Length: 333
Image 1 (spheres, rainbow, N blue to C red):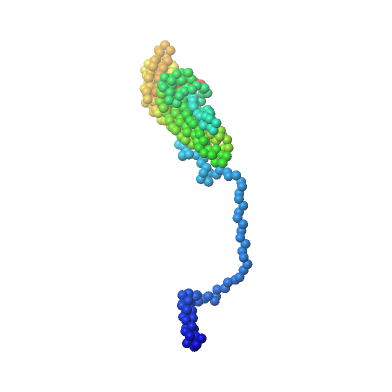
Image 2: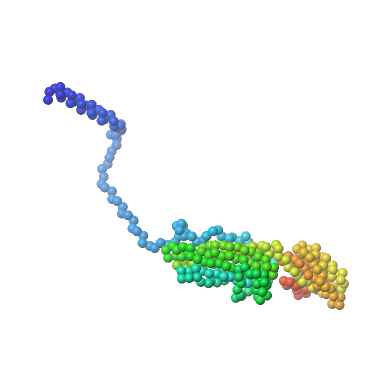
């Protein structure tokens, strides 16, 4: 190789090296970077598979314990019991009737779980629940209501209609949903006092029967709280009673009429009628139309009107007996 050829080769290599190095950005402090050699790191083994059976959890997004919102009552049990006693609703005869079915995998079955729950709840609040095996449709006619009231001597009727069916199954756990409709009838006036439909689910269970009963009990409990709240509130405001008042030792018809006029002016009394006054027996009989929560004040009203000369002898739901003292004030047991 001659000198000219060698010169051109050296020049070509220099140009190529310059182009390669010019395209790379080499950090100025490259010499400060130190790489420490070390052995290989071991890789952690994968976690063992959990073979424990899945259990339902309310937080897993698949388990539903209830459908829709609850029906919280506006009054506490203590408030309800107080109003029931004050309005004398505890003396009214109440009967519970219903038709409930459960859809199971082997067919439909009749059940009384809801009726038992409702009966127990009403008794807890102080209602006078009468045991009865009679059947009545959910929408009885007025003639059917009259016949039922006459046969059973009852005032209020709670009607329950419901069906429970499987909602889903999570593993070995069943979930049932219950839809119920409840209605309360005043058999005397044929008035529908309250009506409500509610759907809810109960707790899961490995047994279809247990899951169905849980759904029925939960739904009935929610409805019972709501319905009793409704009827007690309405009864307190609008319930009217016809009360018979019998007063003895009334010397004159003018004295008997003074009692009528005086009671008529009292709050919560809508009218007072002097039905009869007998001169020989000196007995006056009255009919009073008043709010249910006013009857407990009748004794005090009579005492005010007669200025202490008449005292109440007996006081019951629809009958009051009072006796007048001609000489002084006498308390009569």
